[in-house]
Image: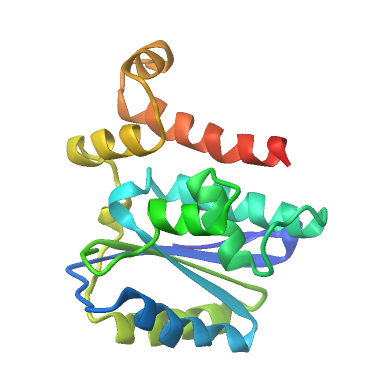
Length: 187
């Protein structure tokens, strides 16, 4: 899903992959992070811990704002996006929390760049390298993901119940996005 963020003059592609298999996550990241040399930032996430595309979209928005406001912690939009998506100030903890690992089978990916054609080109190149099946449904919530996300983001049942308006999944997305936004307030 390619979206233009007018305020920052940037395009963001958010997608997912099912049945990804790679033995060494770090080697995979380094090989595919080289895509950033053409003016885009690429970041990968364990999709089991992503609370919908909105979770990543707001993480990217906050990362772009941090760079604009010169409050960024990292040196790249890709890493800053992980910090916000994990609602953590430390890079290592953020990656450990929601980054890909050797056992990751469902992966989410974000590509951010100023040129839509370059973003689409990088999407094609990384998709070919991933070897999994493109499938944005890995970003959607289900009962298994909901439990993991609540645990990782320390969201209590009481918190979900107080925010519920009939659908238990919507409040979870809102609560995760709230935690993403709170990181900006802590800086």
